[in-house]
Image 1 (cartoon, one colour):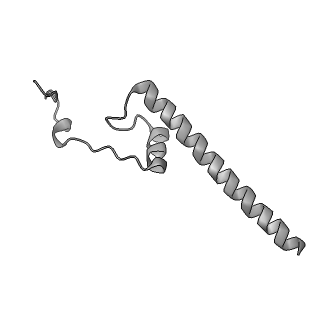
Image 2 (tube, rainbow, N blue to C red; image 1 turned 135 degrees about the horizontal axis):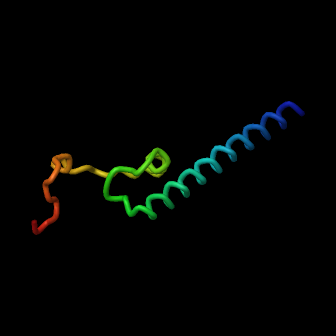
Image 3 (cartoon, helix red, strand yellow; image 1 turned 180 degrees about the vertical axis):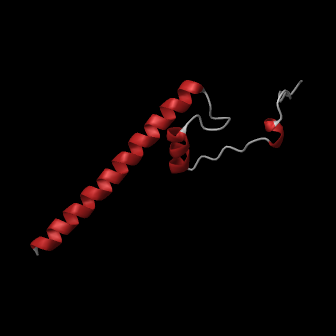
Length: 76
């Protein structure tokens, strides 16, 4: 009986730690995205990329955006 309680407590503590880590990662990533106003392009770093993966954000890249010197505005 004691072993069941101890195992249950460890599982709950592990799940809480994983959720806490995920929330911290997402909040740091969101802060970095907001600072750089970078939600329309590639993630500025691994932290932001991880936050995008955890939240399910997918940013579609334009096919012609890799060509240097080409304007991508609407009225160019």
